[in-house]
Image (cartoon, rainbow, N blue to C red; front, side, top):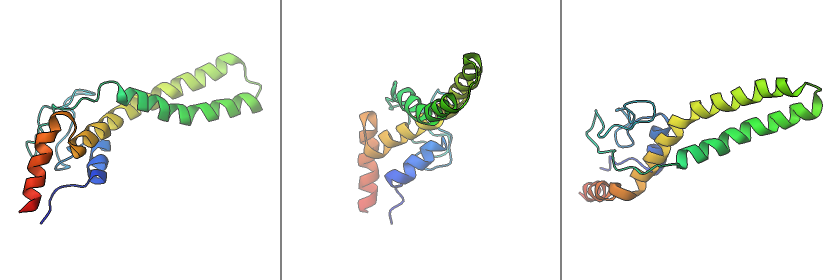
Amino acid sequence: MNNNPTTITALKRGLFCRCPNCGKGKIFSAFLKTSDICPSCGEEIHHHRADDLPAYCVIIIAGHFVLPLMLLSMAYTAWPNWVHLSIWLPSFLIISVALLQPVKGAIIALQWAVGMHGFSAAKKRRNNRQEY
């Protein structure tokens, strides 16, 4: 019987900041500091190399939410610029901070699922367990 999560399952677990292996342990020990190992199943997580990719992804996602709304409001309202700045800059900041941890969790889970970087040994172990 295969207890190994699929890539989609691992991504969902990562989005909820949970261990991609078991889905129970927290992947983060602080806001963006990952745990070295899962406190629930003992899976090593410290291998990840998310680097700047989560920030780039968050900028793209937040931009797709905020920019169309900002352009529509500028086209159809006569608000002064300070009103636009006071609405859209905090909106972008709040959305960005809210998305940063889930996006980083999903990227770490993706690396874990496909065996990137130091996760390749763990993937081989999972595949060997699957054969039995």
